[in-house]
Amino acid sequence: MHVDPSALGGQGPLIAALVDDLQRLGVTPGSLLMVHAALRRLGPVDGGAASVLDAIEAAAAPGGTLVMNLGANDDWDWVNDRPEPERAASWCTAVGSCGSGPTSTP
Image 1 (tube, helix red, strand yellow):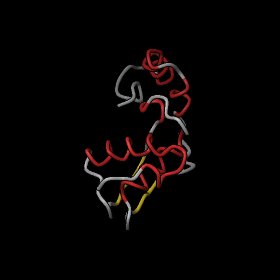
Image 2 (cartoon, one colour):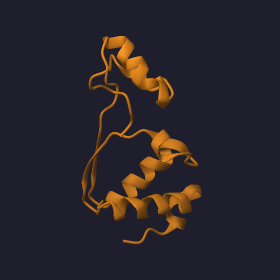
Image 3 (cartoon, rainbow, N blue to C red):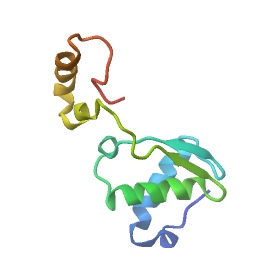
Image 4 (tube, helix red, strand yellow):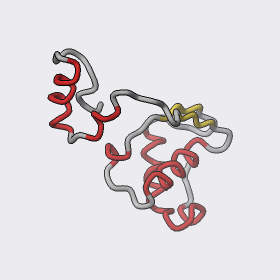
């Protein structure tokens, strides 16, 4: 499926590129998608989260379903506020060991 950038508003070319990437990952019209994403892993995106959502919706349209977890309470979310290199040390200090935990972003 080719997405016409002119149909996507001011961020059309960017969204079309994201749609192409999503389709290469296997997103097709009618897909059911569970999305949990960190914008920092995508890098700078003109239009921010709204552009990413527009691209996901365009890639799964028509008939796709987007499911997202909103407002989850995560007692360890503070770890994500730290720069990546500091996360392991922060986790180890908090739990008293350096076993498994949220020390890096997949």
